Image (cartoon, rainbow, N blue to C red; front, side, top):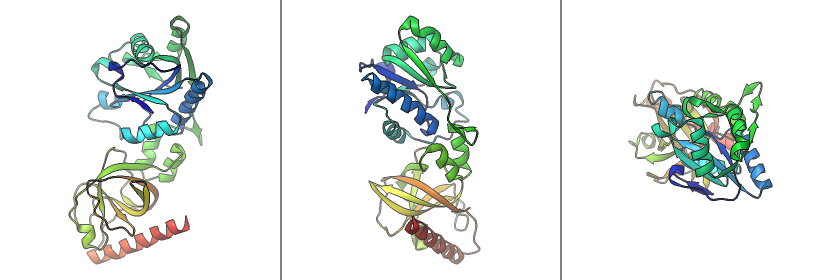
Length: 308
């Protein structure tokens, strides 16, 4: 897949670019429908299915004190965009200059000139340009004059609710993994780096990988059955998210105990794929009671994967 890290410094020359635009955080089922339409139009024209996405997320720029809990980092987003048909991804640095572009300037300078778009595919609520004054109807009005085609894709509804990144975040943050899976079309995962811990899990007989996540939408505190991707190998794991109140009162951590695995992987990148929430995190009366409960959790997770 072709990736342009800064489309403002690049002029793309690819065959018949069919372009869609958005943040695509999570690449949920609504995004996937837009990508499918983009890829289908590009295939019909022997062209290129392309995505223009913003970095950072516009809400991070406009509300730095209240940024969204992001569902994907760039690595995962690129993987998912390629999986759902993108041939090329263009990143637009979202800064003051980008935020101040009037809709016509955004259209002509970025979408048509820099991205080389011949066709545009947008979602039902797409808006762009200064003050979000550009929309599908504006694009329709400009299409004949500037020589491009435009198509609008309707929303995806599940149980009467419109699939959106906001709705996915709500499910994730509440620990509703099955609800999130329905909206994403896959299990939710968190990518991160293994940091060196204090060895508390090992002292309890259950060594853990302490994971620093690359993005911020973290499931609710609790114990989860999960798979951990180390390299290309998935391994069953018991994952605790929380403050471990029985043995410490630190900030929230993600700790993964990989079953039947005891290799030092400090510094490595992992992906945690969440399957099922066993229970909320709670404080136990003693370390011994905690160890007994961890043993039961591990046994339950082993049985879960054995039955899968």
